[in-house]
Each structure stands twice: as structure tokens, then as C-alpha cells.
Length: 303
Image (tube, rainbow, N blue to C red):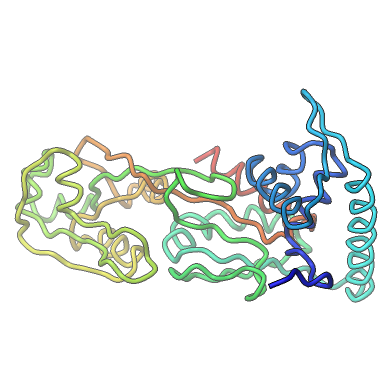
């Protein structure tokens, strides 16, 4: 089928090109758009292939626009400025800005919400709306500014937030009330184990037998097992003294600091999964979005 000359390239691709053209740097464009440098390079290459034009000359340690690139950059820049001006006109004076964030229930309740008052106190004109869902939500279509996603780190897009390690945890009162030892993996056989079921869209299950295998241990049959469809529910059961849970650090580190949970068994399993921040392309220039992303990264560094 012949190409439709009236069909626009994807708008996020044009926005990435606009950033690269203004900065003449894929690295600076990546920082502005909250994506990786390789993602900028792929977007620009895809745009060049779609248009059948070379938009940049790639020099040693330098980037230059071609004549075609300059012409496109001028048009795209003017269009983005027009949209920005229209949005500024539509926003009533004094209107509070709302940032919409989607993430998993576990990260929302265990990591994000306990810290969120700090962001709100430093940005009093910004409201934050949190959607907690295991199913990844389309950002632009569902009106989200950014997502914090649980994903395989070696194949992740977006900005890395933090990885995770897995270690058994329980409430101190469980140890006091049961009187049972819990110092080695073999001791787990005398306790109730709490785990998260595998459900569509939730990523890898947190199953004890998988942890035993990862730690080069043989199968262990517990006294009982309680399974949950939400990780935060499994953690709440552990805090209530109902059993031993596979704690995901640093997600549960606040509970460790508060001594609501303890990790009596030494030996953490590094996970291949972790969390990344993905910003909706059209939202990446909003100062409040940039402030939230920078705050998230700072919080992760202090985790």
C-alpha cells in the first residue's frame, strides 16, 4: 500500500526529534524526555526511515541538522509551541494541577504513599492522583502522566528506579508468640508461609518453592500456606503475625525500619525484576511532571 502523504508520524516520535534538534544531543534529549539515549536514537532512526530523509549528520562527538532536518525542526517546534500556548490559555488562573500516576498496588501502598507527603509539602499547588493496578495502563489513552512499572530490568524501557532482592520476613510478635525457631531455611517447615498467587498481568509469582530453588535448597513442606492475590495483603498478614512472607526489598524497608517486620534468616535472592518510571511523552515537558520524576529518583537513591 502506498504511503499516505497526509499521515503524520507518531507524535511522541516527533516530540523526541524536537528535543534532539533543539539540543543537538541525543543524551540531553533523553534527559528531557525521561527515556534512554538508545531510545532517542531508535526514535530518530525510525522517523528518518519513515520519511526517507536524513535528518541529522552524525559527526564525531557532534550532531548537526541537515537542511531537511532544519526544515522539519522548525515546523515541529512551531506546532508544539502552538499547542503549549493553547493549553496555557485553557488553564484557569489559580487552578491546581493534577498529576495522574499509575503503578502496582504493592508499590503504591508500601513505598510511594508513605513518602508522598514529602512531595506534596514541597509542591502545594499540585495534586497527585494514584491508580493502583496490576494491569499496565496505556498512559496517553487513559490520561496518565507517568507510570511506575514492575518489569524485567534487562528489557525495561524508561528510567530505572530500583531493583529488588527477596528475603523471608515476619513479625517480631510471631517469633515471640510461637516460640518456634526461625534462623535457618529448614526452620520454615514449622511455620505458615504466606505467598502471592500468579495472576494474569501481575508478573512473576512470589512462590516459596521458587525461592528455595534459587537458594539451592531442597523442597520444604511448611506447616501451612496462605495465598493472596495482592502482595500488599500478604505483607499485611505478615505484619499481623499470620506467617512468614517473602519480603521484597527495598519495597518493605520502611516496615523493617519500624520493626513491624524482621528478617531473621540471612540470605537474600537478587531478583531479575525491578521498577522503572515511564513518562507519557506529551507530559514530559510539564514542570510538575519533571519535579515528580526527579523526586522519585531522589527517593529511590535514598532507599
